[in-house]
Amino acid sequence: MITVSGIYIELGPVNRPYRQTDRRIARVWYRFIGLCLLGFAICSQGVAQVSRYNPAEKGWLADHQYLRAGVVPMTPPILYVERSQSKGLVPDYLRALADKLGLQLQIQHFPDQEALLLALREGVVDMIGAAVQTHLSPPDLHFTRPYLNLPAALFTTDRIADKELTALDGLEISVVTGSIWEEGIPHLLPSLNVMAFNDLGQALQAVIADRAQAYLGDAASVNHLLSTTENYAGLKEMMRLDMTVDVAVATLYTEPVLQSLLQKGLDRLSREDMHDIWYHWQDVESPVKQGGDVVTHISWGLFMLLWSLLLAWVVRRHSQKALAHHRSKTKRSIRRLRRRENLLKQKLMSLKHKTKRYRYRAKSLRQQVDFLSEVLPSCAWSWDPTDEICQWDDEMYLMAGQERGGFKPVPASILNLVHEQDRKHVAQLFDHDNRDEIRITYRLQLPAGGERRVLDYSHYVPGECEGSGKRVGICWDVDNYFRSGGDLLLISSKIDPSIAVDSTD
Image: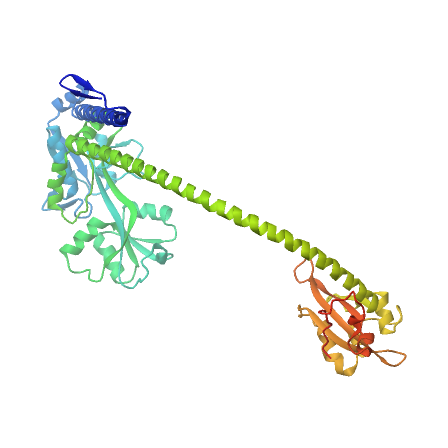
C-alpha cells in the first residue's frame, strides 16, 4: 500500500515483504541511536566521576602547597640525576601529576630504598614517585595503578645463534642489582643463572666480554644507552619477553585520602599530556596507554557497533546463499540417489542370476571334491616351529609305511624318508622364516622297498601371540594318477574336464 496525497493505493500482496523490510530497518536504526545515546551518557558520567574530588581530598589539597616525592635514581631514561636535577620519564610524569592536582612538585633523592622507606614513614616525603611492586614489597605500602609500563627484553651478541629462550638454559644472565629481575629470574626462569652488577654499563660490558651470555632488563634503558654511547658495539636485542617493568606511585596505607587523590590525578592525564612526555623520549616504545578522551571512546564504540551490524548483515546474506545452495544441492543429491537406486536394482537382479549359477557350480565342485577324496587317498600333518616334532595323523603314518610310536616324525627323520633328489624341495617346509604357501610333489621311500609319489600342499597359520603359529599341510597319494598316464580325473563323468592336478615333477 502506497500513500499519495492522502489516497491509499493497494498494490496487492507483492509489496508486503518490502513494507516488512522497511519496518525492520527502522527498528534497527532506532536501536542503534538508542545505544549511541546510552554510551554517550555512560562515558559522560564516567568523566564527571573521575574529575570530581570528595570533601576529604579537597581539604588535603587546601592544606598542602607542595607534593613531596621521594625517588631512588634508576637507569636512563626512566629516572636519573644530572646536575642535581631529576630527569627522565618518571619526573616528567610526576610534574604532569602535580600540575593536574594544582600543586608544586618537590623531588628528593635517596641513596637506596631503605632510606626512602624510612623518610616516607617519618613524613619527610608524601609518596614514593617510582615504585615497583613485588612479592618483597613492604606490607604497609599502598600502590596506585602503574603509570609506566616498560617492556622487558634479552640482549646478547652474535655468539648465540639460536634466538630462542631455551638456548640460554644453564647460561649466565646479567642483571642490575636491586632490580625486579634479580629477584624474579629464580622464580620465573629457574634454568638461568643470575649475575648481578651495580649499574647497567657493567652488566652490558659483561655480555660483551663473554662473562655473561645475555642481559635481561627493560628495553628502553638499553636502547637509550646504545643510542647515546658507542662502547657497546656488537650488542643487540635477542627477543622480547612477555614481561614489563610496571612503575607506580606508592603511599602508606595510613594515607587513604592521598592515595585516592593520586590515583584520580593519574587518571586525569590526557593523551596529549602523554604525547608531550613521549616527544622528549622518542626511543621509549609507548610506556603507558591509559587515559584518552571521550570523543575517542565514543568513536571506537560507534565503529565497533557499525562493524557488528556489518558482520550481522554479511552473516545473514551468507546464510541465505548457503541455504539456497543447500537446497539446490539437496535436489541434485536426490536425483543422483534415485539414479543410483535404479542402477543398484539392476545390479541386484544380475547378482541374483549369478548367485543361482554359482550355487549350481558349487554343488558340482563339491561332488568333484568328494570324488577326488575317494580316488586319491589323503592325509594331514602340522608342524610348530617352536616344537621340532611334526603332528601326523594315522593316514600319514600309513602312507609313509611307518607305525605310530616306532617312528618319530622330526624334520631330519622325515627328510631321510624322502628321495635324495626331492629333499631340497621338502626342506623348505621346515624353514622357520618361510610363511608362504607351498605346493610340491616328492617321492617317499617305503621301508618295504619301492617309492610312493606324494602331492603336498601346506600353508602357514598365524597364532594368537606375535611370532607364534604353525604350518598345516595335506598330502595325496598320486601314484595311481601317474600310473594311469595323467588321465585319472577323466574316468568319471562327474569330473569337470577343466580341472587338472599341478605337478612339479
